[in-house]
Length: 304
Ligand SMILES: C[S@@+](CC[C@H](N)C(=O)[O-])C[C@H]1O[C@@H](n2cnc3c(N)ncnc32)[C@H](O)[C@@H]1O
Picture 1 (cartoon, helix red, strand yellow):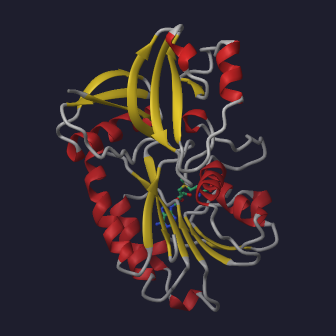
Picture 2 (cartoon, rainbow, N blue to C red):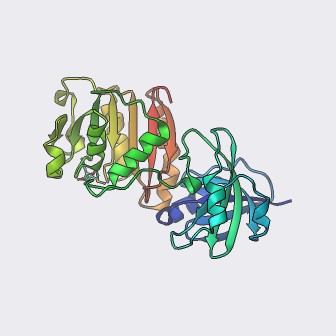
């Protein structure tokens, strides 16, 4: 008997996903793929999980248009915006609700008249949208994509940001994430040798330390910080080393690190990064959000 699984991810992360699957599940074989969509086959059932995926689950195979009539409740996702979802399937998707903990039936429109069906458990940290597409509305006044990355993480984890909490933001320029944090009524200390966006830097609640994060020391802090966030575009081993160093004199209740995974072989370092942060008493999770490219978020919370 064969077992099939499906994975949806962003095209930029496809090589990272393949490397992750190759190393964690050597029994899995790629069965079929199109940009952003992959099915996998195994001769035994495995506890399948893919970190570099927006969503993954059990695959029930390719279905004809007629076979889709059997589904009374399903979300429908299209691989490309140009693939217009037929009106009856659109109606089915819009009228289907799934609760956290339930199994979602997902109809994946992979090509014109090409439909695949999968099933996955809806988790609290999932976006409640077909195919895990972002539910954050795009704006034209944000200084960078990092605004959406952070907004998506905030939504997925329902992050317990409280009014006027203090955030140490490493790699803050030009300021997309800072803008999101300020909009949540947080106070931000941004650390980045690069310039911040003019609009962001004059906002109330923001202070800029125009220095590399390697030079940050206890002398830069008069108050405790509640959150540590990093989007520094240096190798993840450097970021983790610096975060470990700072956790000797700072004790945030939550840490959000966007780790840039430039090369597939860096995927193997991630479990070690998680262990190293766990040692400071955090519960640690990974999340690939819709706005990510070659990166992954490490979320560490005192009570995840
Ligand atoms: C992806 S960008 C950050 C985007 C930013 N989070 C935002 O919301 O707009 C990466 C940033 O890391 C910064 N960076 C690189 N090396 C750094 C270092 N040693 N210390 C602090 N920031 C650094 C870069 O200057 C750059 O602004």
